[in-house]
View 1: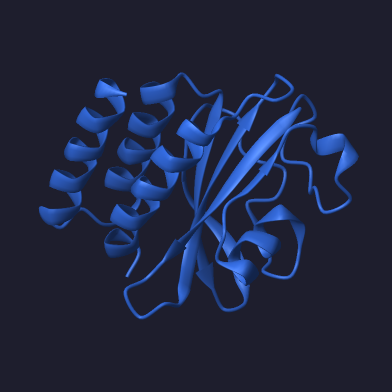
View 2: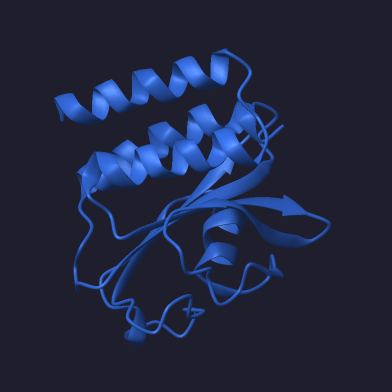
Length: 151
């Protein structure tokens, strides 16, 4: 928990310093990934009715770097303005495959101060039941910070 608090402080400092654009957002995605040893982290922005990946970790791009806001677990998260945590993605009909090896996923909406969803954080794992309430709490706090960077 102490490590995630430190990461939240560092992310907050980057956002307050005016971090925007692809390079700082990729740096933030990597900080989030490293904080909890996640396999893959993607940050998506909502643009013209689509989710568009603006930052991600790793060398392989997601299968859908851009997709309609009406699809996937992402659509459910943004519509409800609640995190969606799925223990086994293959049992959830909303799942939109990003990587063939993904077994579990958590999608956290990024909500602006106005209350409007502006994006999301997508974290994927090759393990079943990979995410806990601690992950959800950490990622929701991170999403609150990222809302300023995605304006």
